Image (cartoon, rainbow, N blue to C red; front, side):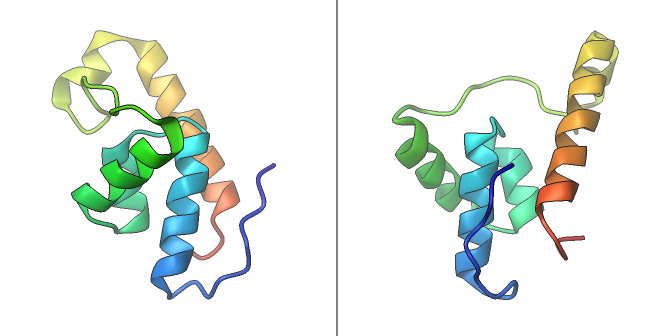
Length: 92
């Protein structure tokens, strides 16, 4: 389990710490942007800082064809969003 540093939930620091934790778990920038409410450039910059490379390209869960391509994608998204929900108190 990853423990986030204590930062007030309303601050930008909390959102960036949560984004960092999600990227370390394998999240992609568009997913982190929607969960943490940070900008596209900020998400990509944090991703590049952590992984030292550009983010992966490809279809994402909100793409209508993503679900049709494979049931594995749907299961992966459900597990990942469950982990996000468990790790981020008060985010929803």
